Image 1 (cartoon, rainbow, N blue to C red):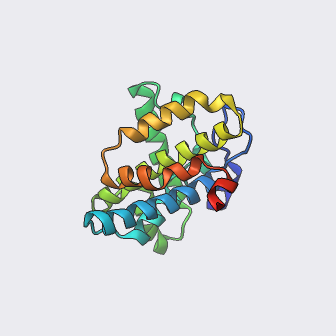
Image 2 (image 1 turned 90 degrees about the horizontal axis):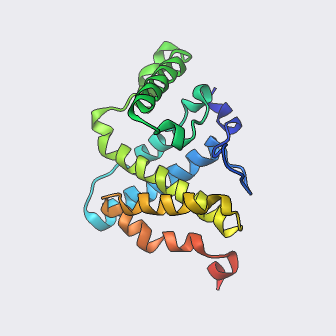
Length: 187
């Protein structure tokens, strides 16, 4: 079932110059979450487990192989819908866990049921998820896709509102490069 992540497209309500599926997105989130953990450890004296945050990020949208990718404006339209969707995600996670042989379920459980000891890592995954969405908006906007203009503004604002030093550092040091062309990168 996890292999089906490549079949679930993101941004389904918008015209895309380049399709993105949840497998690609999860890879992006894992790379960014790893970077945020390293930044936290090296720049801010944190003690994040960089490898574990990668695993959490890789699995963060796995339930969508059952639920599909619910567009953000729908998923967060109001508290009722948000709460029902959380229940649906929980049920999907339980369903995926039940597909595993019994001896592996506890090993995969933290990817579907957030554990208290992973609380700080999940904050990094959530931030990385938002940064990944911003990067998608930047890429689409750079390709002249005006469909993403408002989404870009919205995602930039969301990143500005994240109160994590790691995100502020990433925004200052790494995010500007996503606005560059290949030639600008290599000069």
